[in-house]
Length: 232
Image 1 (cartoon, helix red, strand yellow):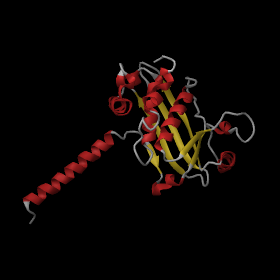
Image 2 (cartoon, one colour; image 1 turned 90 degrees about the vertical axis):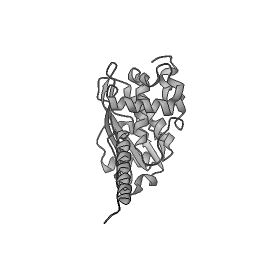
Image 3 (cartoon, helix red, strand yellow; image 1 turned 180 degrees about the horizontal axis):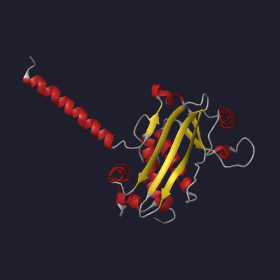
Image 4 (cartoon, one colour; image 1 turned 30 degrees about the vertical axis):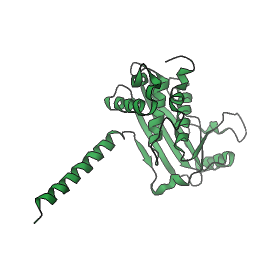
């Protein structure tokens, strides 16, 4: 027969594990996939193709890719570079953006870039203030065998309560006073600040240390797009 004291200890440990799991889940609501076996650790260099943007909001993909580059690079897991938009020749990797990639395409990208993997994706939805929404689909493909190493498919809604809690956590812990006087609510009205938050959450789904704004350039990096122009 089990002793009451021992039973209480076991129950207490179970409750603690359950609570920790719920807490972790509350801060991990971004739909993502990570290949098992630590495959990403073998990637040294990544080329990031321009994001496709079939929405009715032009240029949103450019600012978002800039923030994604900054945040992902700040993780220090691998080196990521943007594919240049140069027409013609081997450097024209942008022509492959937004289309399903066959093995021959992956082989061409590897020859042109010398990278180990390619990051491709598209903006799947966009809506401005007063209901700030942004959808993103992102895939990291191994250029050597076409294996899917990492993927994100999610829609961020600034009016959603759980998203707002994560935005508040991001601005308090990572940006600090850089967004005053609006603080975290800046991301509910500023497309640039919202993109910075989205990019941080995307980078946070990568295996390894949690992404930080300081590693990606601090508040200056996150808020640079609107600060340099004096716009929200």
